[in-house]
Length: 263
Image 1 (cartoon, one colour):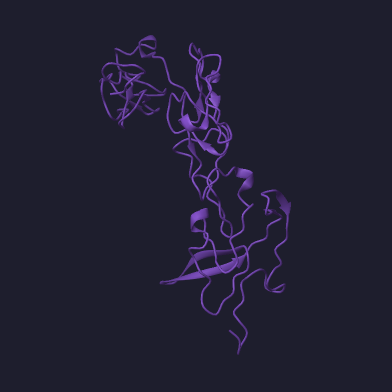
Image 2 (cartoon, rainbow, N blue to C red; image 1 turned 120 degrees about the horizontal axis):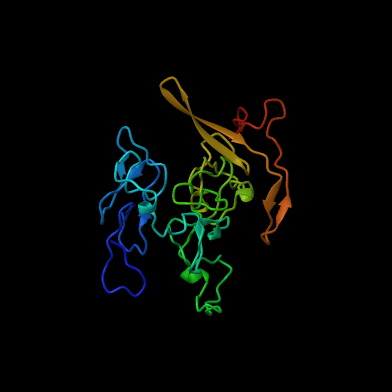
């Protein structure tokens, strides 16, 4: 079921659609390769052998004698990764792409606003577009998000080893924040985990040290290296150029063991 605005009772998902979570306000279309010929379902069926299900929202597979293109038409919600609060859209091209830093994880999303937009005064259409009411999610920490990010693509760009990523990180900001000195950062390290991995005993880890687990036979070996960054954030949050000096100019930027008789 799903519940539209001001509904008195829940509505069954129509044929070609499904609803798999509580609190839904629009049904989700069956993806290409699947169909649903019953109402009120929580999943879609795989297209059977010898048939085609080439479009979203299919409820009769091509090959079924009762299939007609016209009968398969239903008003479609804007896809994940897009949104629009206006009605009477005639094409999915009229749905607006959600910008970078955010995840538009639901179909039919009607309220979006970036974090900086905090004024909830209704616009000329009577719709309050502000961050507090936004139906989108922040890009999760440890990852970066580009335009039109969906629930399925929000983890496509993990933060690189040696760096950490706050929530709301755009793709071009993935190398802005170096792992703090005294620690190493693995792939997909978030701001809350930047000091989770302490530099091992008898090693030193300058700012920007990466950690990678390597398999050596039956053992898992931790490989520590120091990354280079030309762009970091200063104390005021401005992007400024910076160079991280390599530890050993002969062997590259690998963290060295402490010299003999030192610790």
